[in-house]
Image (tube, rainbow, N blue to C red; front, side, top):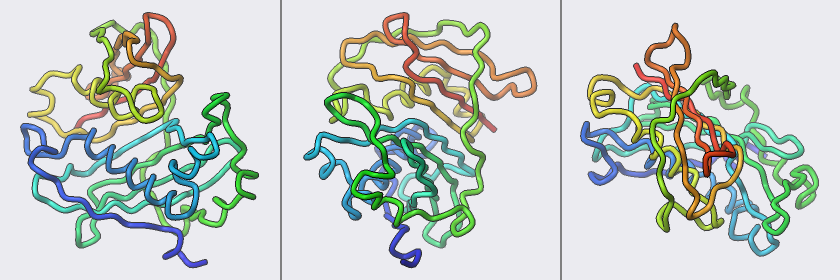
Length: 253
C-alpha cells in the first residue's frame, strides 16, 4: 500500500465569520477542521464514528498540539493533510499538516486518540479491533515528517483562579459531553484583546483528562509556564471545583 492510500488532504476556505478581529482564523475553527479531517480520513477506511457508533464505540480525543508559523487569513484557502503516525494498544497518534495551496506550511499538529466503548466508557484494544485493520494505514514519521515537538507535561504549582463558567446546550457534542474544541475557545477567552493584537498565537496544546457534561461548572486556573517563558501560560480546567477536566498550554510570539 503506497502513501496515497494512507494520507488524505482536504481543502477548506477561511470564511469571514471564521476570522477574529485581526483577520486571522480562530484557532477553534482550525481545530474543528482538524477533527473533521480526522473523522473523514477514518470514515473512508471503515472506522469512522458513524460505523463505530453502530457497534457502541466512538473516538475520544486525548491530546492535541497545534503549532503555527502563521495563522491563515480570511478568504485564504488551506489544505489539511492528515495521517496516522503510530498505533499502540489503547491509543493512536495522528498528525496533521496545515498547508497553503502551493504546499508551504502554515503549521502542523499532533494528536492522540482513544477508541472507547460507549456503554462502559472503557478504552478498546486497537490492535485487535477489526483485526487491527488500522495498522494498515500507519505512516511513520520517516515517511511523512511532522516537525513539531510532541506533547509536553504540565506541572502546576500555584495556579490562580481566573474564571468560572456554566455549561449549556451549545457546549455539548454528539458524544454527550463538552466538546473538545469548546475548551480551546473558553481558554483563549481568558486572555485580553491586547495579547492577540500585539502577538501571534504560536502553539497551543491541551490534554483531556476526563469528561464534563452540560450543567457542570468549569473553573479555569492560570499560571505562567515558567520565568524563562514570559509569553507562555498553563491553564488547568476543573469541573465543579473538584476534578481536573483538562490542562493546556498557550505560547505566543
